[in-house]
Image (cartoon, rainbow, N blue to C red; front, side, top):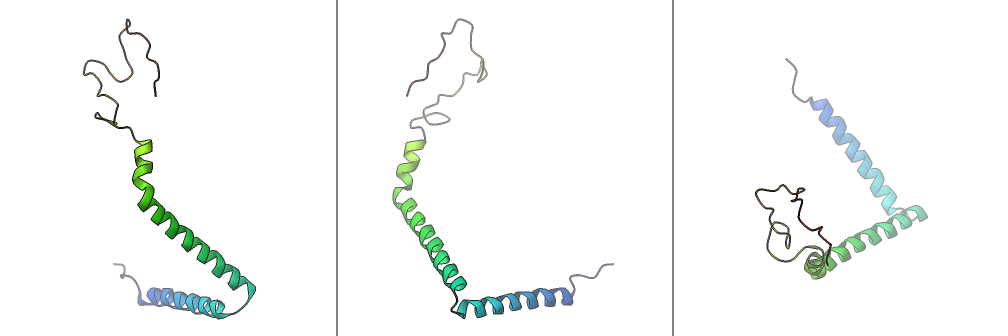
Length: 101
């Protein structure tokens, strides 16, 4: 019978995480160009994500209304299909349908 997760396995994972974090903190506190560029890019990323979030809260409904059909039916303005016809078939005498906006 196999033993459940070994304590040594968890110990190695914890040690690797702690060593990574300690190196990251040491680099973060250093005043070199690489860290400065990283801080600027990270700040820009966070700012962009926050701006997108707030813009979506303000304009999200407007954007959704522009791209979704209005009305009743299965897909907004699309009528439900007739039960005797499949979605792709039509009668031979039907005139061809034209696309209208």
